[in-house]
Each structure stands twice: as structure tokens, then as C-alpha cells.
Length: 628
Image 1 (cartoon, rainbow, N blue to C red):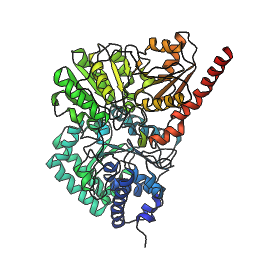
Image 2: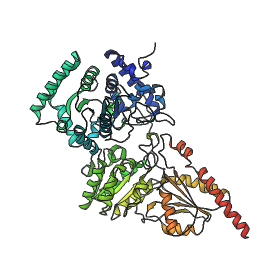
Image 3: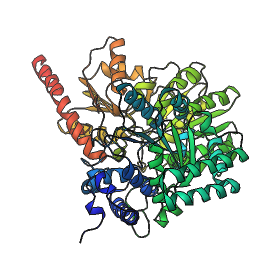
Image 4: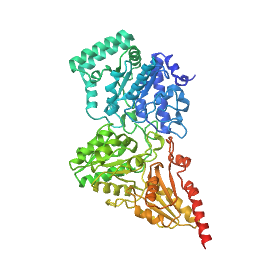
């Protein structure tokens, strides 16, 4: 006899289950994702926390007609399983498999794709208004974690919901975490609602009525009890000031309560917000004990939660270097946007707690906040992933660079981010930064050079950015003390006269492979560690342009607007006609997968570079023979 989970082929199958069966299915779902993600890795904690919530949504609403949006959507695994993707779930985040986030092209049940926080309410409002204009009757539900409410876009949407639609449901999934524990006034506000004993007593009484009797009448009683409680506690509730009726907080793991509440909310003709309390990592003790680790991780032991020991990462090297530099310079402060763990600042904070600032999921604020500190003589370092820094482009231009303020942008996850896919690949930062005046942009080839570049950046009088990859370091020996580099000065690793290979960052390994291939054919290759994207080493470019048959550029970035494009522009400005073979990512969004496999597929290999440069070298040899 099969399990309940095996009988679920679509959301229609969920609707046929009674509460006892739904509760049993919740247990099966937890066991299924714990065992599956132990092999593939993924966002375990967030999905264990929304099992009952997702079951209740699909028990009451009908996708794809009704629209359910998940903010960030890393907590959409249960939704994927319930919407016909259970048999493929073992492929999640694997090459050619299911994406780790919701994807409109993957299923008709995924009405909106996302991978960054703060978008669900705005997108849901857009769908609700479009429905209203078209005369539709479908429901629109936006599920957003409490961390999303630290994001400015969420509040911009809240400011417009009541003014622009009469029907929309917002579910506030409150688990007190994003990746790290949530911070700031919004987090304290939610906690005050949940923790007040008088409010909770009245609320619990009403919730028991719903659970016991169900139906519209009981929920109305709950609503009246909540209103009475709120009038005693505060003059107003934040969300009601925005025009949304507030319900909750309710137990996000109580299936009967969730289902009956959603049934009632469906009947309302005005925007509402339901506050549900969930437990991130529920059902797996290691995930409860290690909230940050089990937010998203690689393969692990499904019994113990243990993960393989890893080598040092670039994030850790960045944090250790920054810690040492800050010990000697009290002006240095570290700023991150809800990512102290991912950026390595968890290692910095114990040493300099008063100079560590986590502003929540608010990248724009982080950058302007840094600008303000810089005006008062501090040296702010903004540690923000490349893909998340995209959100702060205007403050980088307007608030930092225009004022020539000495803010350092430490961009982790620059380049391909592997299993996380296109929402997290850092393939655009060179293009969006190198056109900004006065910004120094650099990329280290290893951990020792990362330390040197951080020292360089902190010594500069103006803005700078360092891009470095996700994952483990190259394994080179580090100097006892970092030293500052000369801005715009590249490093010649080996000289040569037939081809000049300009490698950016960790791509130096592929560049060495290409150089070896060229040398085997009897030609000579110069290998250059570019170091700086802006300013470029124009003198070195001019030097080799007058000697070699071709340039080759390697970068872990999109070719359009990237480092290779900068080299081509420099040659053009100098009036030097040299063929340039640019090795980088094509002008398209790159899917998720293993880095080496994706590089092979898209031609970011020494072999692909050699295939392009070999004819140029052959032509040069023929010309020499003809001349002799």
C-alpha cells in the first residue's frame, strides 16, 4: 500500500483529504524533504517551517487559477511537491533538474518567479489589479516572511494595496529569521504582538473556537476578540494603518485553524493580512539547533545533520583580514544586509561588535547608511553579495560615488553561484559598476590577493569594490600582513610574445591551461593577472598589443559589458587593432548547475579558448614564413 504522499499528483488530491490525513501527509512531507535534501542540499529549514501552511493554502485555494506567490520562494519546495513535481524532486538544484526557487517556465502553478526578498507584495498587487481590470474572480495570496518586512519594497507595496485593490490576502509567515535572526524595529514590533500575554490569552480563546467549530461565525468571533485585545494594547496596528484588516497571530502548524481561517478570508471583499507563527526547521532537531546552517546547505547526514568539513572560504578570509585591519584602525566598520553568516561577518562581529551593523534585507539603506558614516570620517565596508548589490545601484552612484566617499563594497558570490541559479549568479557586477566614475574595481586571483585588495581599498581616498567568488579558496600561502597594491597595475606572471592572456580573478587556472597548450605548439604566451578592472593597466595593454598576434581575456562574468569589453574599448581608444578572444558567459541568463559542467557547456574552458586563438597563431606563422 502506497503512502499518502505517493497519492498526491496535483493540488486537487490535497483537497480530498480530511484533517487527520493532512496531518499525516505533513509528517510524510517532512521526512521526504529531509531525506532528499540530504543528497542534493538545498533550503531545508525554511521548507520544514511551511509544511502545514502550504498544505492549507492548497486545501483552500485552487492553483493555477488562484495565484499564490512566495516571497524569495526558497520556501516553495512543498508547493513544488504538491503541484506534480514529487517524482522529479530528487533533481532539485541539480543540472537539468528542478530549480531551487519558483520558476514560471517550470510549472503553471508557479505564477511568479523570484530569488530575492521583498517582491511578493508588489507582484501580487499587480496581479490583483490586473484581475480587477479584467473582471476576474481569482484569489491572489502573497506569502512573505517577517524578514521581507525589513525590505523597503514591501512597504512601498503596503502603501498601495488598499488604494488599488479590494481583494488580496497577505500571509505574514513569522519565524523570526531570514538567514540570520531578524533585526530592527519591525522585528521588535512583531515580537511585541506575539509576546504580549493579555493579547495572547484572548487570541487563544478565539482560535480554539475556530479549531473546534470552524466556519465564518467562529472566525468573526476571533476577529472581535482580536480587536478588543488590540484596543487595550495599542492605539493602532501597523497593517491596519495601511488599510489591511489584520488577523492573528495564529499557529502556523495548526492545520484545522489554518484551513478554516483561509476559508473565511476568501469571503472578504477587502485586503487582509494573516499573521502566522511558524518554526523554521520544524521536525528536524539539527535544523532547529542550527538555524543559520540549515537555512541553505549542501548534502548532510539525514540522521545527525552533520556536513562534510570544508576548506576555508573567501568569505572567511575576507572577514579575518577585515578583523585584523579593524583592530589597527578604529575607523573601519562593517555593514551587511541580513547576511552576517553568508558574508563571513559572523567572524568579525565577536571582535568588533559595536562596529558591526546588520540592517536587515535593505541593501539600498545599507549603502546610503555607509555613505553617511563615510562623511564623518569612518571607513565603511559593505559586505553584500554581488547579485544583491544590484538592488542598490542608484545609491552607489548617487550617494557614494558622486560624493567620492571612501566606501568599500565587498562582493561575495561574484561569478557563477552554481546550484542557486540565475537569481544568484553574480554575472553582472562588472557591467553595472565599471561605468561609474571614480570607482576602483578589482578582483583577486586567490586569498592572499584578496587580503591585499582589502588593504588597498581601505587606503584609497574614494569608493572601491572587490569581487570574489563563492566557495573555497585557492590554497596558497598567505603573507603575515597584507600590503596595498598600486591601483590599475596588473601583474605579469609569465612573459611571452605571441599571445597575451589577461586573466581576471580565479580564472587564472584556466588561463594557465591555455598558456600550456600554446607553448606546446611552439608559440609563446604572456600570462597576466589583471587584478584591476578599473582602472585598467593601459600601459601593459599597449605594450603587448604591439608584440602579439592576439589577446585572450578570461572572466567569470557576462561577456557583454565585462572585463573583456573593457580591454576591447581600451585598445580602440589607443587605436590598436589586435584581435581579442573573450572568454566569459554569453548574453543570457545561465541556469543552475555544477560550475564545471556549466563552464564546459558555455565554452568557459581552455580548450574553447584555444580553438579560437589557434587560427590566429597559425595565420601569424604563415605570415612569418612568407616574409622569410
